Image (cartoon, rainbow, N blue to C red; front, side, top):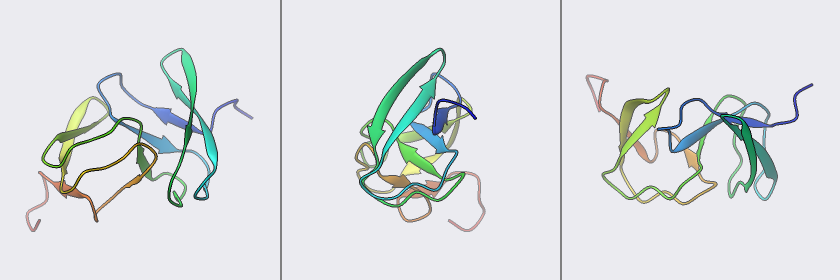
Length: 95
């Protein structure tokens, strides 16, 4: 068993991927490189879903794996779920 609950996959990423099902109000241990920090999630975060580790302003490109996966369609606070309701894909045809 690891000593973290979520991982930031690249230092350019503003999001982490949950490695557990997390409940709103739960504090997660987030591994980023060699360091581990704690972030309290403000919404339920399903296993393998993304959440913000920094505040992301509307219109800002969002990175995962160090690559842009989309743009924030609204402001996203630290600990909030990042998914189709606030992330506009830059790759999908119908977005």
